[in-house]
Image (cartoon, rainbow, N blue to C red; front, side):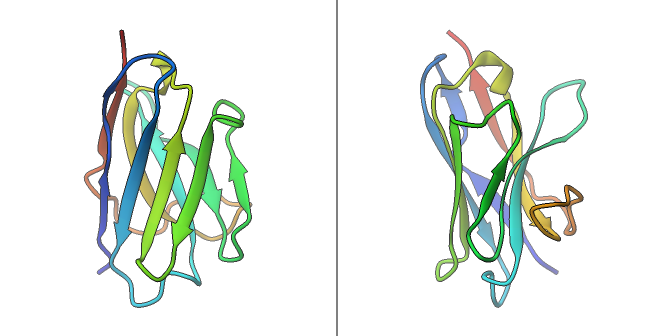
Length: 120
């Protein structure tokens, strides 16, 4: 059973930055395409960004140019650097495995997520 543990969320003012981390308990992370998702109260969970096994990245239009997804396969970590945060970025953020950069379906059980609140 793969476990996902997200951290790094918090309260930040508009225009601020946060770096989210996700620890992935798998024997080998490098072969997996990994993604970040988010869910705001009353909304469906939505896809934010994907990093494929070869390191290529894709982003939702709403975060393109502000967020950066990265990975450290040796440490089995996935990161989301979030800059120029906006109130509409407030949500619980989750990481998960996806098939590829072209798919959005999460393949593992969800972790507990990490809360991001953008407010002045």
